[in-house]
Image (cartoon, rainbow, N blue to C red; front, side):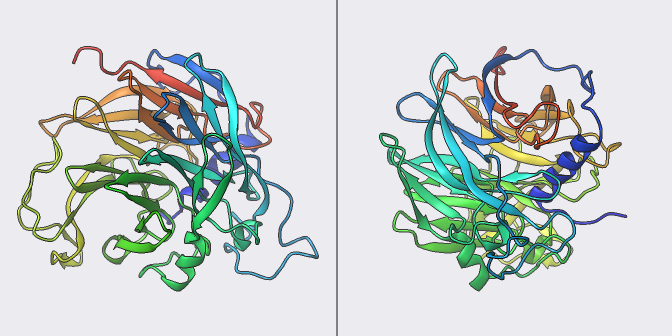
Length: 403
């Protein structure tokens, strides 16, 4: 039976599988040749190159032990148990800085991290730069995640000292600004923020569990850009990219895995007259779904491109084409399997082609100043697996070859 899952719950399925069975010795697909850039990371997620040329990586951390079973723990709403909750937390998430030789150092630490019963982790989910300043997407905070004194949200990080402060308490905001659709079996009271981008002095972040895209200003003002759940239901949007003023949002979709039914949605303002990104075309009327035609006021979904599976990151390459990172494309497994992650590219003709295969539960990607694609590999490896909690890698691929 098909059921809805949040991104965090999807990674839980990986965690449970990893704790019950050894990891396969041979990847499902022949891996694409790559270069190992860095290793020893703790559940790496989103990553970005900074103005200084160094690579900065968000890490979910190691979770903790504080949670509902502790007699001092305050009462709060929890994810419906017994799976994936209850969560236990601690301040073990961090941001790493990686130099040109792949050497890792800790830039900032002490972010809230949380772990569920299956070993899945949430902590720092993404890093983004805006006007020279660094911001972090903090996903592991909140009472429901075992961190009652550390809300989830957006933090500003000082790259010189590593000190950080939360400028927008998105987890608290969600409680007073609920999405139209709320999944009954995996609802996260404090949300499960996953990715962010900066556009024209404003941050835009995606909340997968509630299905919302939010904007956050430098002073911490939070606004809803669009409630994707209102028209699409619980499709678990995860990642966002921007092209000429329009947003492109990829979704994880439902579990068990149903190949090629995840999508990339084009989200535009009213009165859209420009060109969509290469390979996406232009419908000229709006996006039709089961709820009928959308009227264009504020931001609306104007295009939907299917043919993807478990999308966890989207980004535009130096060739102007959109790339999508997939957690796993193997429908034969009840959980995201090792060796089944891949990267797809949307050609100018609209055709979707595979450019990278054989990834191990990848969770984030970014293009570097050298034009290479950098990927957080083994980003969803849970505690208790043979690989351990510092199995995360950064791989790089020269996908620009032949352009």
